[in-house]
Image (cartoon, rainbow, N blue to C red; front, side):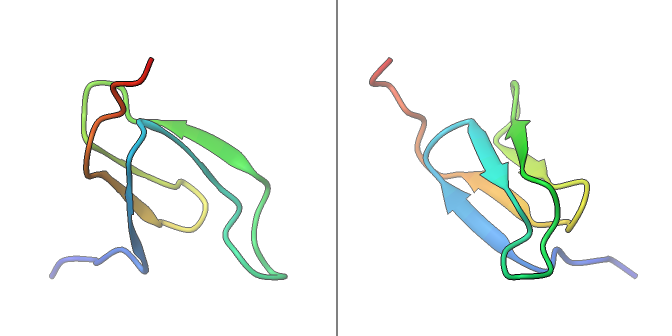
Length: 57
């Protein structure tokens, strides 16, 4: 049995923020993908997937 992420969000940067959304969210956290192209929020399990790397830096 696999546990699917409750929500998957495509992003264009390797650093993302998550607050859980809505009135019953969680503390704002910043997540860094490092060398991977994905990161999961430790509070709400949202999955963030990198779609295109930001090359403007």
